[in-house]
Image 1: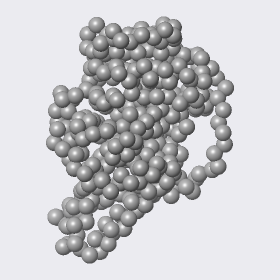
Image 2: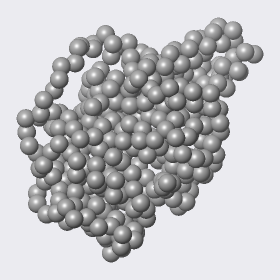
Image 3: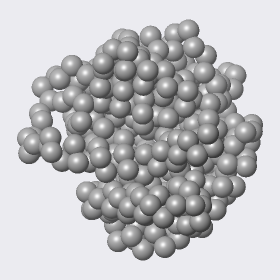
Image 4: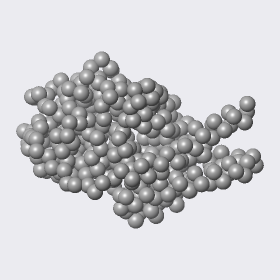
Length: 383
């Protein structure tokens, strides 16, 4: 009995090392030469920019949005628990909102913006206060709304690579963007949501949260689950770019990752719900997406896999060989994701510090239970 339990445990952990490569092979076999996709519609956008406590990065964020090669939009800044005395915007397209009471919730901030819309916007897109937008961001999103999608995830490229932590954070993002975005969407499933750089038909977003008051981190996890359970797909657009501020020091890293780990433990149950729905309905979109959602955070399944490999040095030579092969496939998969995105040389150089990066994520795991009590949003250093 113990033998079968041990074998089952190894399979549950080990598939996470191999699945990315399997999905890549399917993606590569299905991949066709991409043709330029042109948008023809002129949707009315609400661009919601959320800030919590910190406003130092808002001015460059708004300035980048105002440089979009698009005109049919309004910007709604929700400055939650912020001092707005230094926030001055002359452009009439910028609406500054300061809630009277602290919201401390992404969805509450989004719904607050929606309740203060100046007109009925067809689409809303969510941008963080530390993001910068590419000038073609909305045009690239529109091409997929024209195709009938109601939810679209863009890509969050690194805005800064000024420290080892920022480079390692960016490497992790490139891995997830490729396998949970580009690959997953193009094999017939949905892209996972990433917190910002995403857009939705306004009615869809409102329907997801009209009866759900969500607090703490993880609104994107709840939102994607609701969309998948509606049997809808989330499109991935690799050239709809926002530039995201990466963590630059260990304090930021621990604070941010503790919230993310807390979120995974809280919402990984959705993966089982979606996967079983996919099995029941023979729905590839739900099945693959659910399988990806139940995957532990990267550092957890790497550490558990490493423990399994070490254990098999003493238990089974054949299983040891299988684990070595699985790790080799994972390393190859990781390298493919960096190569696909033409990763900056600084990112490659930073990889030698992965053990230190994992150490601080282990600290994050210790703090994860009370993560939302410790902090609501990542506080970035401003130079």
